[in-house]
Length: 142
Image (cartoon, rainbow, N blue to C red; front, side, top):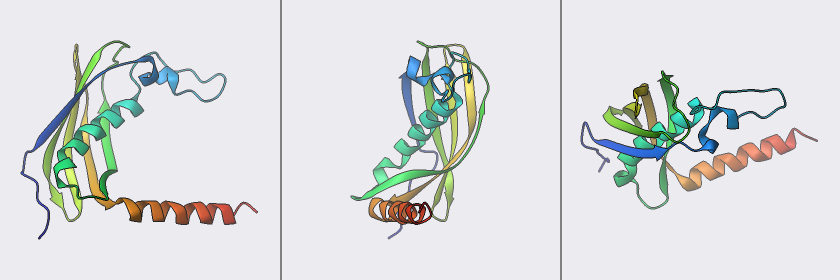
């Protein structure tokens, strides 16, 4: 029997922005400078987590959900110490893919919004694919 999820299912999370969440923490090389505000990459991760929570009841042992696509507008700067609330609303299913509308709010109002798509996968199959890629990468380095 195929798995189903109730239409318009929602999930959310609340996160206090720490120094490790800032764009300035993303710099990898000397001279790279980014502002001391919530990074877009961390915002996307938080929005993904909210959507993943919608799918948690569907997961069998040995399964997890993974992000497939993100289309997010990061529309306002959120400072360290602020609280961000991220929400995901289930929109529907397209085959094996689950679609979500996601949004983020801080004390000043909306700071991000967009669409996100996830899939439910077998952990064993995901890891086997990763090992195949690792082996292919190792073969190309000699």
